[in-house]
Length: 466
Image 1 (cartoon, rainbow, N blue to C red):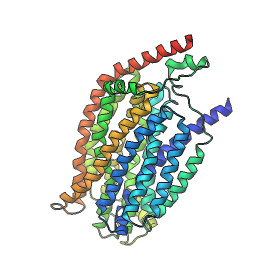
Image 2: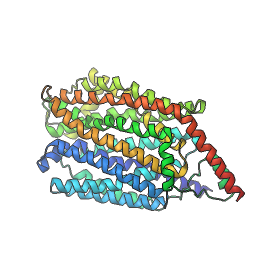
Image 3: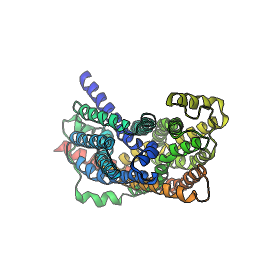
Image 4: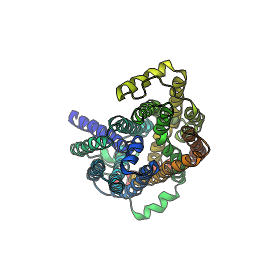
């Protein structure tokens, strides 16, 4: 029993860590837009476009990975995907032209598509309904932590040599592939209370997705709102990968050299995003309210997304004041940034605005994950997640790519860094339809949750009788 519990704990840990690593790869490039663009002699917008296309490619192929995961052994699919993105990340470090850089990043994106979609399917089978919000907040938090770590690795390790962090991450990816081998085999549907009798009797829940299921999945109203909100939400979240660039521009406007400014922007962006840790609170609130009303999770997500908007806008326009040498190294710049949170009122206020904004909007992630599990049958969850992730990818790709064009257009009337601040503020408007769609999901989810529970009870009864 102890051995089985330890293996289960190890399995959970591996999947949570792996969920973060794919986001490390995603967060690695944005802090390095400037040096990469200089290395290949292309505009920063061209490098940003690679990130945007990567989001889209990863989201598209994730649908195929997820559908396969709802049919076949999920562990081997995850190992294959992790190996692919590790190879692509390693190849990025040795790219000698923009074209090779693009191809290497696209290859990595194909592998990244497996980690999120198939990994979600596995994690959903590890969680009971009562604690879905909490555990999914940890799953989502690991992804946010991965993005932070990627930003940190890119900005700190890559400030002097942009290729260095890609080499390191490739080696970590190889180690992650090996870590999959001892994981436990998670049975589909094993966390569902309605199926407890099936597993207690030594039977299996052997239903698998088929093409005939797809129209039924698409007709489920809550799925429609959960997928569509991803487009508008990720238009905003996609634009936020430029936050380090905004902060870098603020530092450069004070006369700091580009390498120092990159470090400053990266450290500030990392500190400002620590509010994402409070997604745990959003998940707990979703769990608690869901026990009172089946509308609970969606209502928590709707409120968080809408309430965070004004705090983001204030953050973008607050000044950034520092006192350090113009050519300070990474260590000196880091110390100065940390000190400024205590000594500079505007920096302290910026940190507070970021903390509140991230705490509110991070309620979106765990409740979105949990709702997908709540309103879909076990054999459908990976596929629905991947379709939602595709919508997210489209939104994030457009947000990440178009915001660069918006910055350039605003630059004709506004000086740097004001054009970056105004552009990011404009993209906050897309959170409004996101909140509305979560409210609509709160009205349809009670029926969809009841339908799933009824179907599982019927199948459990048929399996045990057989």
